Length: 75
Image (cartoon, rainbow, N blue to C red; front, side, top):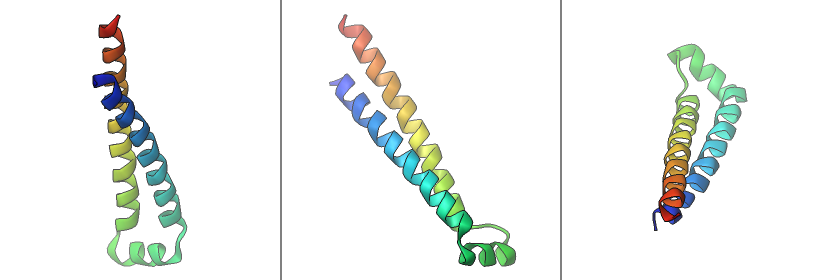
């Protein structure tokens, strides 16, 4: 059971991280984002992309640990 949850977290973390990277790159290149950055000094779309990448990385790491510990305990 632990291995299954770990594997699901691993795959979901990778997908979320890739989606976050895509969102960050898209926001970084948009004209509206550049204009918003000039007036406010920060971009909410870029921050959201960063948060998705950080969350995806954390989920991937937790999934990897759960998968490996589930595999090692089974032996």
